[in-house]
Image 1 (cartoon, one colour):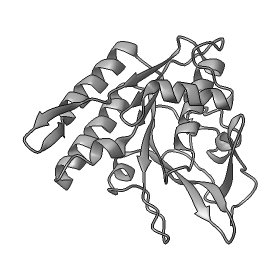
Image 2 (spheres, rainbow, N blue to C red):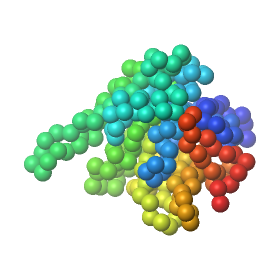
Image 3 (cartoon, helix red, strand yellow):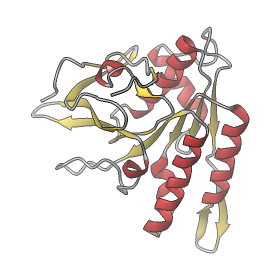
Image 4 (cartoon, rainbow, N blue to C red):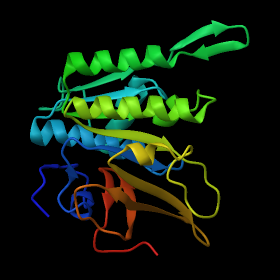
Length: 242
């Protein structure tokens, strides 16, 4: 397989699992249940890109106020506002009020969101992008074909911008075989999927990471242990979780 340019995540152990990092200009899904570590992993992806590679990044949130994400990141030794090489290189943009009043209550306007999303990225020209979350965006559509069309539009736009992007996706915990995403769409339009688990064992929970899919590269096919530490996420490429 020809050498593929890599976007280093900087997450301990993950680049080894990915055979050197995420292939540059890929749009991937970071999917998992609540508490699996999706936000922590993707903020590390932006922080390490800025600090170690001088990459510009943008975190686009539909879920949580940007201020909360910035403050929580400080618990993992990431100060986006003051750390040298990071401050000014990573932007947090929130779109929490993309609603209009309707007869049945507030209605989400997806085209308004897409326009705002594209405008911010075209103006800022980031190397790395995080969208939190593609599930929140997709859930407003009653029609599966329309949902797929709009999710595909976002993924295609990101590819055209020549950036490396992570789309966060929430999945319900079913107690059985893990799903990749709630609507089972994003994994088909994305170049790769990182599946984060928070599995119940006899007396505790075990966090895990699996590369479910990654185009244009070899990668580990194992399910690896993952821990959330004071310095963020750590993965263990030489260990299996089960």
